[in-house]
Length: 492
Ligand code: NAD
Image (tube, rainbow, N blue to C red; front, top):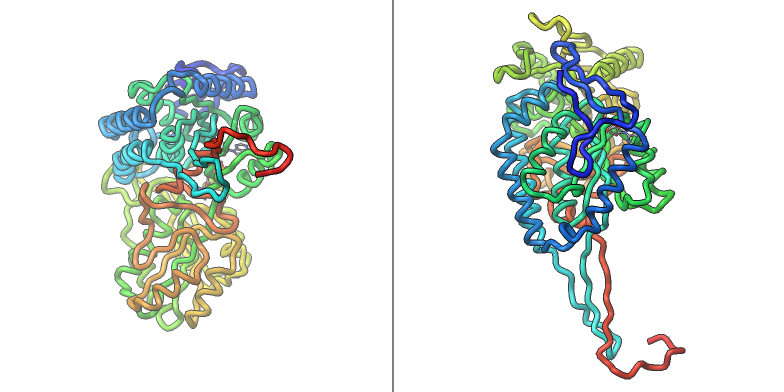
């Protein structure tokens, strides 16, 4: 049994409460580690540490180039330790090692990319219309940033915040999900090895509803970078607004994956599966509403069901496993609740709808990929995020019809469009309201590209240059070039 404390001011420390949260392996159902159950006092210590580090010349006095070098050193360490990080993350959330290994190796690029960007953020000289003054702008770090993460992709989602926040010169307090804190507590050892001064990166663990408000409303914290569900996002946004804190919100979705009759249907089939059944649908961008043009609807649905006949459940550490368990027991319960709701609403269960029993893993949280047909877009199963392997299939007739259904939702995180008609593809990218649109592919992402949501799916962007600008404050500086101060009673 591993026992993890918080990581504050460069040292691992127990919780003020003296109590711990148990972390469970979703395959065996066994408790494998314990993490500190944070309190307001722990948050106070972490924020004080981050604030002191922000003011310390050891960090504040570093050039942007030197910060960039530290980030790149961290990127190297991630590459060297990718398998180790993947194995810890798998133990906590049960995600496939085949995907996790790639994700961890790719994650080094977050630090290379933002490390490279650190010394390329430039202000400008303004051709001012006022005589006798020289006006320029500069970007500065905000100070202490609080980052709050979910359980589905703990380290990559942390890194999308941490890398740009550090590149910009901020210090951070990280709060991982209570279900998946271990990998981050292993990861910070690499942060230390890379040479970041103590206090620049701090981690407090615990339940969001217990110590979250202390973090979100802490006077040292200038920005909240949150990834998680819409409900927690709403609470945090309201709390942050009271002290005018900046927020980035990466929330949920109910993304349409739209298949036109003129699509390459072999590819579209794989795109539909990748959209909702990869990672058992536990991804924010899950293509959980499959909009299929009526002329191909029945045949496509049949092919989809057939495609899923031979899928392989198993241990996530087995590279041949395609479906791993659901990450947490509460999530499994939520999935079961929505399957019941969909059935009561009159959706037609075509496949799945129950737990999967997998030989050798009697306590594993496995769930069958589930498909509902005859779904009306107004049903709860079409409007609310399940965050599991539950697909709602919705027929449509025309392009206008597809756009209307796609947009008739409070979310706007992502969308997939499958068509061989280039003009139609472009028209759809213009009309569908979502932060990421994929044409003839699904789930492509890159650290170089901005990612975020329209509507209730979020505020702000992560990734790319926009993702870095979220962590900077813009200052306008006016310097007089005229020795003679003009009339003090009249504005220049
Ligand atoms: P969640 O909202 O329950 O929890 C996310 C984090 O917020 C956890 O660390 C939790 O402890 C913390 N938290 C909860 N209440 C809080 C409060 N009142 N104050 C402060 N912190 C609080 O989400 P989850 O179940 O861990 O993750 C699943 C959700 O995350 C899904 O809705 C999914 O769509 C979303 N998600 C979004 C993205 C994206 O980039 N848009 C990516 C991954 C996951």
